[in-house]
Image (cartoon, rainbow, N blue to C red; front, side):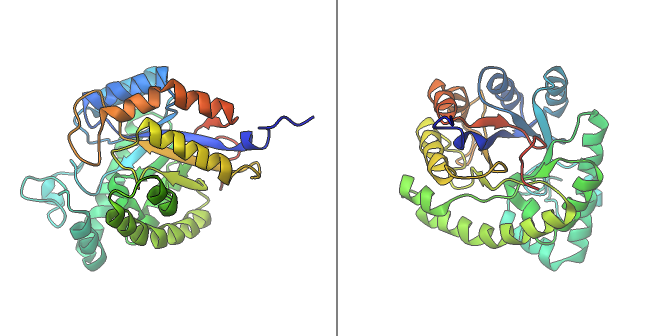
Length: 299
């Protein structure tokens, strides 16, 4: 006899922390959320200030799946600044200007070439860690840029990545949950919906796995317990009659330190990952915590 939640139990949840290696506080949050909470995966900034510590944490915790968080905006680079003069600012860093850099990548062949070189250098540095490459995603999702994504897919496939994040958040659900930031959420939906559509086709062609949906964009920096509980209810209703291959990613920006930016990292997100209520609801609905590469993740 089939139990009530047997069909729902086929929903796989990949729970990811971004910016692993950016700071020691983020590293501490990743470790705690994996050991005591629901975190299954983390995305590594290989040029982050605490990347070496993050790698040691990952080596000591092989059940934590680690992917590459490609940084082509707002961060340090692997290559020296004099090789990236078309894309770094006067400090030698990638500026926190996704719209400006996105336009530059679209319009300038020199900027695109430098972005590809930096991206390859980040893949190379990840390979030097010796860690299995679980997945690939991007800081501020700039990896989905049409001038970037084809090269990223080729590198990800070549380096043995199990999958790639393609943002497919739910604009209607986000607005039902909270009307705050409605204009910003609408702008994100307008920008990322067509990007995701194109990216899904490219990833399929490359043979890379991706999830049916990936949540975190609409609530970036505000992944509270209440929101995630509401999201799990939403997923329960949405995928009640789904088949074996249904999977979803929910990504966070946890830290043990203070909140430093409106979009994260946020110590409240660590508390969400540790929440007994969140874990209990996942268990109640028979959802399975998973990682990229697990059986049933869409490809």
